[in-house]
Image (cartoon, rainbow, N blue to C red; front, top):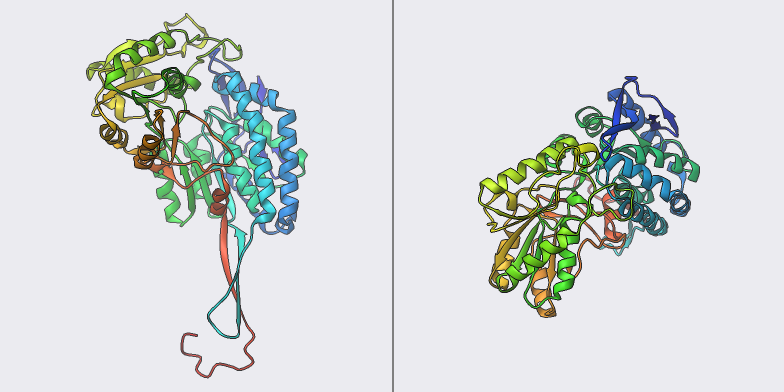
Length: 493
């Protein structure tokens, strides 16, 4: 059993409670580490350190070029330790080592990208209409940032949230999910090694209502960035509004993956599998609603089932494994409950449809890759986020109906389109209400491209140039060089 500590003000410290939470390896079903159970005192200590770093310490005096160099140095260290960090993530969340290693190796790109942007944050000189005045704007960091990350890709979310925040000059307090905190705590050591001043990057772990709630409510936190469910996001939004805190919320999805009859069938089949069975379906961008044109629906479904049958379940550390365990017991129970709901509502199961029998694999948290057909848009399986390897197939007649079905959801995070008609690709991508639309690909992400959702899928964008603006305030400054004092000081000038 490895014991981790909170990372506050540049050093590892025990929680004030002297209490710990077991971190369970989802594949083995056994605790492998302990993380701190933090409380208000730990959160306050971390936020106070972050606030002091922002306004009193060397971080406050650093220019963009200096901040950028630290981010570049951190990128090099993450590259160096990528395999170790990825292995920790697999122990914590049970996702495939191949996927976690790919994410950690791609993580430095965010640090390099925003490190390069750090000294390009510019204000403007305004050609103001008032005589004898010089007016300009400057960009300043918004303040202490609370970054709350999800258990499915902890370090990827660190890259999405913290690279831009640090480049902007903010300090951060990260609160990872209690189900997957170890990799974030291990990562914190690299920020110190890279040379970030004490208090700039802090990590406190624990339960959401305790550590997370204290962090969200803390009066010195100016901005909250959160990845998770829409229900939790809405609660955070309400709490943040009480103190007028800024928020970025990356929430759930029920993404349509639309297959037209003129598509490349083999590519679309691969995209459908990638969209739902990769990451065991535990991703906000999962293409959980597969909309297939009726003219090819039966044949496409048959071939998809055959492809789904080839998925190998097992140890996520092994390269031949395709499907790992569900990360948490509550999530496992939720997925299993939706299998029963779908069947009761009349969906027809053509693949899987059950948990893997107890004892067949370690940990007892595996769900068979599952495909339902005869699904209608009013069924819960088509409307609610399952967050597991469960696919709903819905037929459509034409382009107009496909768009209608795709938009018939409270979510708007992502969508996929498979077609060889580029005119259709442009029309349908424009008509779909989603923050990201992929055409003839699925699950592609980049540090260069904004990512976020519409409707219940969130507020704001992460990654890309525009994301750094959410960590900045614009200050307007007026300087008068008029030698004459205005005659009437009671009027608006």
